[in-house]
Image (tube, rainbow, N blue to C red; front, side, top):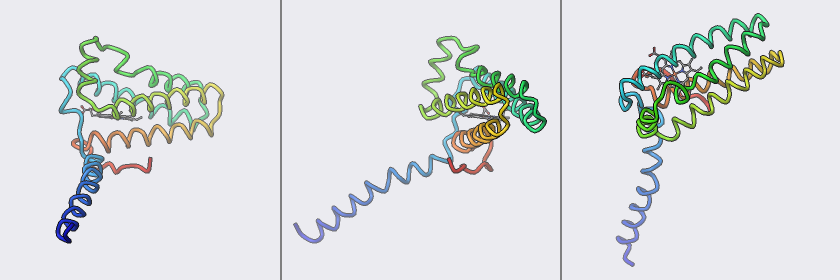
Length: 161
Ligand code: HEC
């Protein structure tokens, strides 16, 4: 093989290896999902987000005042809110699964699982565990927003996890 062919091969290899990584880092902060949703789904998602936001505020006040019942009750409401479980016809569900990446659904699932852990911590009346799961949920909010809501929330930085 001539030197030129070796050099060209090396260059092609380098670009092939580097490009997917580049694509990933770009899409990690700018891949908005909402333009891909139907109006109905978007409306449901926004309503769910507003409820979750209010629940998180109530939970914050409940944690700092030792009101474990409210922590448990509101966290369970978040756990069950899951738009994908409620108000969705099979056709909506299909639209949603087609519109959003698997990673989005996985994040939503993980988030709702953390809400259940927070509810259980409230039932055990364990303030430290409540704080831990509350913080984890806050990271999950910002993580999903940084990744998928960059059009509306461009200021949210990608959290560590
Ligand atoms: C799996 C992804 C995901 C997670 C997790 C998530 N969100 Fe969102 N959130 C979204 C998307 C997508 C939108 C944009 C909805 C739109 O504009 O259509 C949004 C929008 C919002 C909005 C604006 C709603 C409005 O009025 O239009 C609020 C408030 C919000 N989220 C709160 C939260 C809070 C609080 C948490 C965590 C406790 C959270 N979100 C977790 C995906 C997520």
